[in-house]
Image (tube, rainbow, N blue to C red; front, side, top):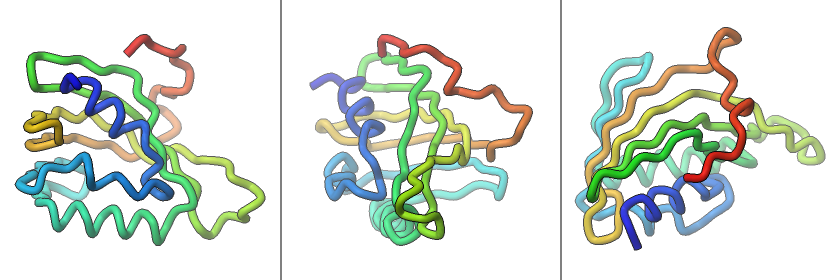
Length: 137
């Protein structure tokens, strides 16, 4: 499987429902994340805790990719995260856009190994990623 296929399959998961998310994370993974709250460095255990938090807080948690670029074992992804919070009625699974991301992943041994992310919370002026047609990624 190519690095691009690994990343594409990872972002195709529903993090609130799928139990195989951590299978995509290398045991020595390091994720460097710049967000509106500042810089955070996460290792495998930290990522595992984040995923547990997602499962506790959301009914659905999905990624909608707009761009996926590969250069050898490095993949850049641009996407928006959509989720359904647990407070929402179970019969009303309307996902809400949460944030925009750009991530760069180094894939090692078929798993996400070294990551660099930058994110921005959604606002009403941001480009609506759902307006993109399906891109052949």
